[in-house]
Image (cartoon, rainbow, N blue to C red; front, side):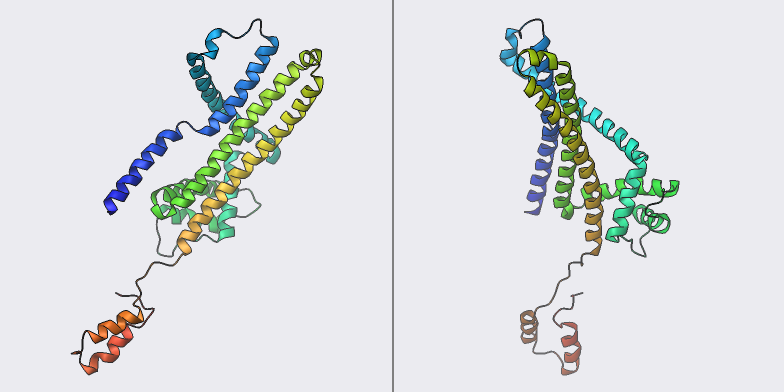
Length: 289
């Protein structure tokens, strides 16, 4: 039965991995970007759309175009967000990630066991000994934090009992990717509306043009803020998951009073001299050896 469940989990994992290629976060931002391009073609294009666009071949190309534009929007959006955060915080991405990991470790009190000599434990000791909140991380702390971040992701992926946390962490990544893609899509809409404002006013749609410009600028700022927030929450939740995994009690078999009574009645020939030792070893709440 256990082998059948494991085989089913492996099959579902392969299926979900296949569908992860067609991430809907790419489709959403790609469709929004493609709509902006269609609008500017419709307003400034020399002719109407070809007839094949409305057919099945055109539909397949539209879906493919949404996906490709979505990936491009995601890549450019993440780069743009890091450039904006670099200008705001005056710290590169590696330094900001180091601070996020270090602050989360101190907040959740993630500590290695005294007898643990794994790479993860060594990185934790370096951060606990040398990391200072608010100060610029040293090169040793930076390397340890970045390595620890990768090791924690590996541990979450490899432990089956942490699968619910992995689902939530993947959700954070997808939402951050969606917001990154929508940053570029909002910027594209802002550019299209700016370049087409005169045309829209000529069509007596000037009010809608101004509303679209305001919404595009506002959504670009909000998507940038939300993408950074999801990335920060993802780091914090990753550290808290490992802290919970280390602090939870280990599963132990406990002898219940009924089973103790049953074992005593089933062995009437036990010598009287050994009775105190038997009752002490089978006390309720003590783990069986």
